[in-house]
Length: 186
Image (cartoon, rainbow, N blue to C red; front, side, top):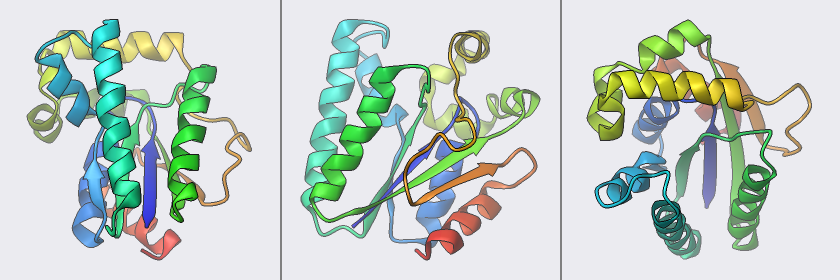
């Protein structure tokens, strides 16, 4: 079992890279909006009810996948490095998969803000993330989150063995996926 954790700021390309990586491997993509948008049909994501349900659904999926005979999973996540709770979340997710014999891989994406603002409007993003179709809200959320939180790691901060950081500002999602596949020999 392989668990590939792709993280980085909003609109950096996590889902799109995950889609491309899924195409060239036997990994299954679970992007973070699959649960956010499901729950968002009933509760705004900022509510305690929505956060509880999103975490519950994700945890159940992780539990079942980690016990399965799947080749592996790709999960996308916005990791706020200044929040201890996000560090704990990543550590707990790592422990779950490693306790069941999986190898965990960490892929950090970073891109220039101007590029991310353009990617925030792409048809693929809007098709797969309904909440992002309110472009004014989505762009404001992206900018406000960037002001409040640190969304990329500092050099040497990630302690995990199977880690790669890619500046994908000027790279296609296909090229990034191939680089990940080659780096980790998927």
